[in-house]
Image (cartoon, rainbow, N blue to C red):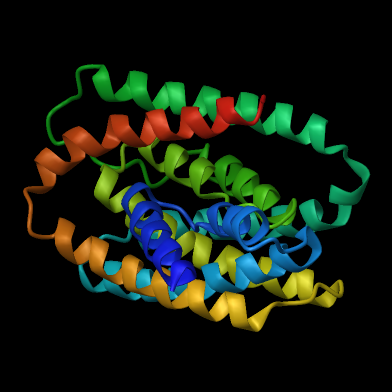
Length: 246
C-alpha cells in the first residue's frame, strides 16, 4: 500500500509541474524499497511510461497539448536518448551531476525571471522557436543518462517559448511519454532487468494521480493557475538543479 501511496503523490506532483516522474520513482525504488540501481532504472521508466500515457490522454482531451511544439522536441530528443545511453557509462556521476545541476538551475532562473517580467497582451507560444530542438536534445540526454526524466528541461523550454504553464505541463507529458518509451526500450535492449511487483504498485498510484490532477486543475481559472504555477515550476526546476550539487 505504501508503494501505491508514493506512486499517487508522484503522479500528482509531476503532472502539476510537467514531468515524467522517472527520477522520483527511481528514488522511491532505491531509497524506500531498497532496490539496486541496475533494476530500479528500467523499472522507473516502465512506471513512467504507463503513468505518462494515462496523464497524456487526459491532457489531450482537455486540449492542454501543443502538438506541433511537442513533435519538434520529440524529434530532437530521440537522438539525445541514444547518445545518452551510449556514453553514460563513460561519464563520472559527479561530472554529470554538476553539468545538469548548472543547466537546470540556469533554466529555472530564466523561467522565474521571464514570469515576473511584464508580458505583452495575448502573447502567443512561439511554435517556430529555434531553441525547441536544443531543449528536446537536452531532455533526451537526461532520459538516456540513467533513466532520468527530462521533464525539467522540457517544461523550462516551453515556458521560455511563451507556452502557458498548464499547457507546458500537458505538452511535456506528451513529449516525455514518447521519450520514456524510447528510453525503456533502449535500457531493455542493453539487458536491464525489471521488478514487476514493485513497479505494478507504484504504477497504479502514478496512473491515478496523473489522471486526477489535470481534471482538478480544469475546475479553476486558467489565468490564475498560470500566474501561480509558472513561478512555482521555475523554483522547482532550480531546486532540482541545486540539489545535484550536494
